[in-house]
Length: 247
Image (spheres, rainbow, N blue to C red):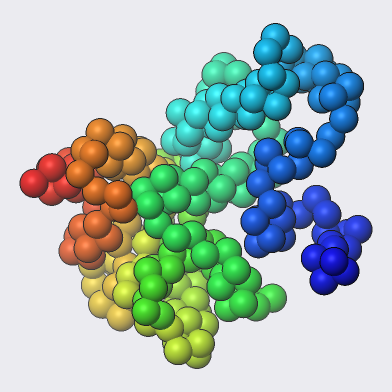
């Protein structure tokens, strides 16, 4: 059994736990009943019925609340978040936006490959999200939050995405698409993206991505989002995507 033991410093690292297929319910199942009851009381989680189910339901509700405020998180709008019941440090908004983006693509049926991402990443170049389509084909995703309307740092993003593409190529992987997710894009940024053919980069606003997820859930036609719908346009419009999914 020693080969399955985790080092103390790794026990609470969620990514590593998932690599071992250890899910939240597995952790809750080994916690004593009294401790679960105390946890529920501390977090103001209902205690009627099954404590484990109540805890899991509570965190599902929390995840939904964050998703509803995905655009506000992208815009780093602390005031709107507070009004909607979300208290979060500004320093944590970037990683929360990235985590929610991962969740959205997972719900779209993609394989968000954390293990391969860790293998490819270096200290200098850190891919945000990696979608593994199989057959060594990958989609790279970069997430950007921005207080101002119209994200406009094209040269910086261009350098990043080219570096990430090189990481994949060196590992004998084919980068078939790069996506940038941000709350909004400036006209200049969109125009520069149109002229940058090497990156094969498309842009999706946070609000469009949420609407695409909603359309996907409502369509019931696809178990996995048809990624080829993301291949054509520079600025991806949700109405065209949703219409295409319904055909």
